[in-house]
Image (tube, rainbow, N blue to C red; front, side, top):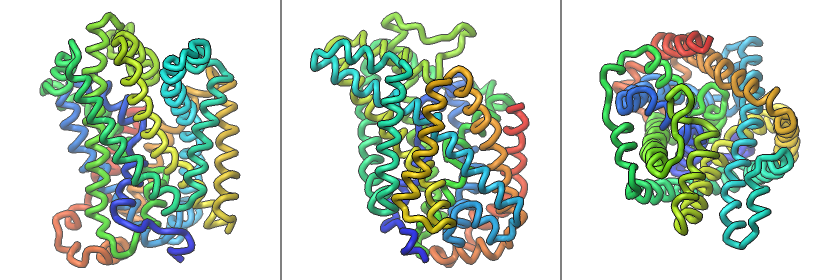
Length: 444
C-alpha cells in the first residue's frame, strides 16, 4: 500500500520536505516582529521552549498516526476510533488548509513579483517593473497564478519525484541564501541596533501572559500543525525510520530558520530606519506582515544604490522558495485525500484540487477588501487552534496508547525506556490541550 501512494526515499528527503512545510512566510515576517514587540530574546527563549513542549509532541502524534494508518487525516481519524465526528474534523482540516493556500498564494505571488522587478530594472524595462509591483488586480492575478502553477507542477510529480526531489534542492538553497543575506545585512549602518533589540532579553516580560500566548501560537503555527499536512508526510515515511529523531530534526530546522530570519529582518529594519525609512506604525509597534515585506524592505534595497537590486533579487528569491516549500505541503494535504478516497490518478487530483483553490484565490484577488482578512482570521486565528486542540485530544485520549507505541518501536525498539516516551503521553493528554486552549481563548 505504501508504494502505491509513494514514499520518501531518504530520511534527509523527509526532513527537508517536512521542514519545508513548516518553514514559510510566517517564520520570516511573523516571528521577527513578534520577537521585537515582546521583549526580544525573552520571546525567543519562550518560543523555543514552547516549540519543544507543545509543538514537538503534537508533531510526533501527526507523524505517528500518519505512518501507522498510511492515510490522510479524515480516514486516519476514522480508522483509529474517531468515528464520524473526527472524520468531519479531518475534512475541516482539508478545507482550512485549502483556504490558507488560497490567501497564501496571493502573498507568495507578490514575492515572485518583487523577485522579477529588479530583473526588469536591470534590463531597462522601467514601465514593466512598475506594473509588476503595482499590486493591481491584474498583476496580482498573473503572479498568484504563476505561483499556483509552480505548486501544482511539483505536487503532480508525486512524493519522491516531485515533493522530495524539490525539497532536497530548495531547502539547502534557502539556508545558504539566508546566511549570505544575514552576513551582508549585519555590515550595514544601524543593523547592530536591531541585533541589540533582537538578542538582548527583557526578562521582565518573560511571564507576561500575552508574550506566552504569542510565543505559543507562533510555535504551533510555524510547525504547520493541526491541518493534517504533517500527518500526510508521516504517511509517506519509511516504516524503519526513527520518527522521534526525525521529529526533533524538523522542529530544530523550523526554530533555526525562524531564529535566523529574526537575525536578518530586525537588523534590516533598523538599517532601513538609519536611511530614513519609517519602521514603526501609528501605535509605535514595528511594522509587520505584508507591509514589512512590500514597503519597508524594498525601500531599504532602493536606498542601497548599485548593490540594492542584487540584494532585493536574492531576498525575494529566498521568500519565494520559503513560500513554495509550504504551499507544496498545503496542496499535498488535500491531493493525498482525493487520491486515497476517490482513487483518482494523482495528476488529475492535483489539477482538480489545485484549480479549485486557485479559483478561490482569484475571487479573493478581485474582492480583496471583503475577503482577505476574513479568510486569514477564520483559518489561522480560529481554525488552526481548534484543529490543533482536536488532534492533541485525539492522540492523548481517543487512540489506544499501544497503537502509537508499537508504531514508534518500528524505528526505535528501545523507545519505551526513553525520557521522551515517559513524558510524551502526559503532554498529549494534559499539557498540550491546556496550552492550545489558552491560545484559542486568547483569540476571542
